[in-house]
Length: 298
Image (cartoon, rainbow, N blue to C red):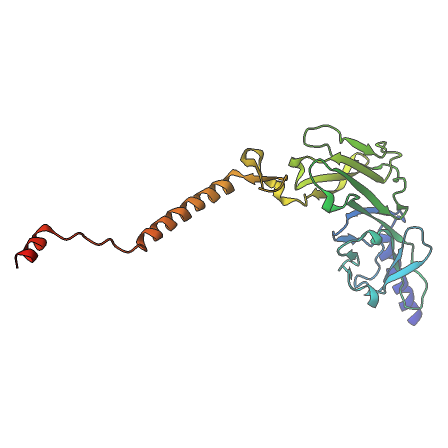
């Protein structure tokens, strides 16, 4: 009777596994730095995830790291990892070092062998950064941006077939001034740069790098150029050149500030004149003629 029970359980597990439709093919997923992502597990046996194991392999490394053991997150991995109700692996606040291959496996018992095949998921992370220090971002300065894809194949290596990185056309609809990186979608680089000479209108502007797979935009990432000298935010029509006495440096001041300074100076002068007049002693009145005549007649 016990043998029949175990045979029936084994048959049921096998049927459930076949119904998952696992093909063994690697699923590719893309994420931006700072995003949250869910990696699906396509070979789940027990819906409560008690048979699910997730392993992680970083690019260029042969070391396999177990992050989920029979439905439980490892103690040292709980900060940004969690398990979904469908046994998918959730990664929050994605970092570049999270890129790699995640493999979902099934084990019916803690000490037993693996049941069925692997369900691998390759996570690639798109990053963007400025090689020019942000303190040097000012009008007429050159800015160099770098857009890179971290993947199981490595960082900045040749993209897999059908995947390419490119910079979005600028506001005038023309190509960026200086560009490096192949545009061939079959043999493109996953590490491209863009160099532009900043203009005054580029303050707080977004620069976009796009990842395309087989002609379809999968994900994009932005970088905002914010000038360190915020005094340059006034418009040309409101600016005048004023020279500070005793120096040779021209200081750009808005007309509204100068008008306010002049108005305050005039008001201060008026108040000073009015106050000085009130503080003077009154003048003595001259004696009247009648009073002088009465004095001599007595």
